[in-house]
Length: 213
Length: 213
DNA sequence: TAGATTGTTAATCGATTAACAATC
DNA sequence: TAGATTGTTAATCGATTAACAATC
Image 1 (cartoon, rainbow over the protein chains, first blue to last red):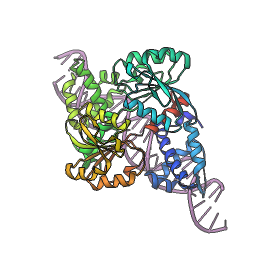
Image 2: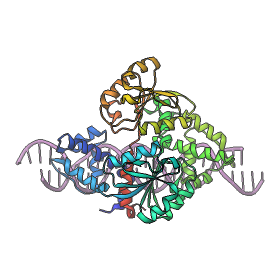
Image 3: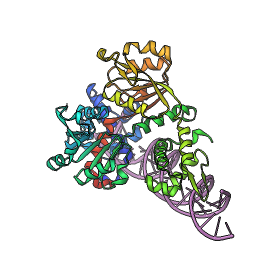
Image 4: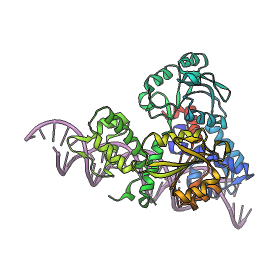
């Protein structure tokens, strides 16, 4: 199966499949058909079968899908068991919340360093990782070679910071700032979470509901 | 202009346009053409003109778009100046970070109440709003009629909570939990932020880059 | 075997892009 | 006026859905 044929929309649905299957598995459900899963997830059965088949034949005609097996397969596809070394920049409320998320479950990453420009934070422990002053980031990266950076600081000097991180070998960013890393660094992978954009979309929709329903 | 003809993909791009225009405005740029904006945003000029025209003719042939005017128009479309009453459930790190976001700028909502099940949080102030125990949520909603609920607690008893909130008149949810409110309550509007899904998508992509680039 | 359900192709639908006439 | 750039329609592209043969 040629990976390049898998569209981004399919990929974005994978974690949701993974969550639903995990839930079914935890509830002791061992078998499910695409049409039952479609009811539970609010998708079409056709789309579910089409999505799964991007990665190979996981089901069995006349039977459906084996839940624990499919769950494991999707976990493998998502590489959730890998531990790519990640660093967190920004140890405020958002940074701490995001650190929790990373530690909460296997997500493909392992947080190995936390940095903040606030001196008062230095030395504090978050999930058994000491917060370091941001000035130590360069040496830390040289010594530990993280490949992913999680950006939890407001805009500020984002250009300087991301330029540095890219020079230091960071290959992917989980970006919570509004700085457009992807435009400045097309060579790296950027997954952005724009909280304000999300809220504003909700504002639009809740003020224009008649048109949407 | 028939609002129902505006696709969700266009709507999701509006906040980003708004941000970029704000930035241009703050930098004293008063005029921009679709092609220059396309360079800055990494979109096609065609798409930009097409998007803007969903809402009416904001530009001028031979000239382009007036930045402050367009910024204001998009702000109006997004209803960022409205103050829909919102309550926050969950005052942990994520809840606090999200509260900051709501207060940071005009986003169409105004936080009027914060709730947490942790007794120790009760009475603490966040942005001059006292944290109340979650048991007070019913009376608070009856007295204050919020229309939006921001969910910043892990799954737990989400069904019970969201059923209650819907009964109490909540019309829209900004949902950070993995509970699928939209499936349980098709009558309300739900904008979800699935942090773990976002991270897992990044995991997939960073492990399968050759196919994506 | 008969019934059920997948895997897969073809049809449809919708979003993006290209093109160019309108017009500032 | 001539040049630039929008507004808008048509063409293209891609994603979703429908249909059904394959097969467990």
